[in-house]
Image 1 (tube, rainbow, N blue to C red):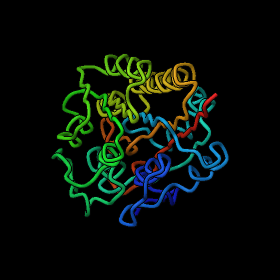
Image 2 (image 1 turned 90 degrees about the vertical axis):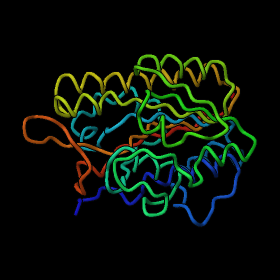
Image 3 (image 1 turned 45 degrees about the horizontal axis):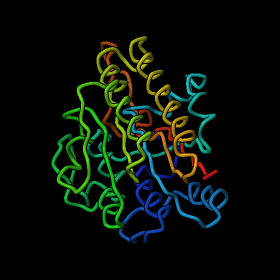
Length: 269
């Protein structure tokens, strides 16, 4: 059994984002993250957010933040909250993102192993769409976020590389046409699987993930200056080293289950 460093599950993101746009949080989902609720009360004073922009870098573990804290300085100084979060089992990408964006556990949403079916359970994207808002996903092709949230009245921007994803994401923020934008980068995960979580190659990709988040937040502050914006750096699961110096995840162990999230709310100027 994992040594858990947080009592707050990644599935709480769903209800937090729903509540921040003034929509009802269903009893069937995980309750909102209390820290985000308190932050909203302090910064928004009862107002709702106009835009929600979530960045999902894959496999960024809590222990990586604890060991390489200085690397995360650009993310920390641009966020209001840095907090340990608890993933779900099995700690693999489609299962975790399904829980993050539905607000329910794998037994409820139905993805319980590494597979990528289209979810029929109501998601955060559906809640925004029902509220009359526009949603978009920006991701690399064949990855979980590109597949499990398909078949919805929203826009999908799917590219070959993380660099193309990041460029398009910044363009989307600049255009300001969407109320919800979810951005996925799987390059740290893919690199750590090959070379190990602490390899030079993987840490270089981590640096790029952090640099993009910093650029994303800076763009939010400049382009969306007149909007209330909820944003986050929200990994799905952690990682650990295995024999041969490679990386892996999926187990009920602290390295895989404990992740680090950053959250912020920018108020309209």
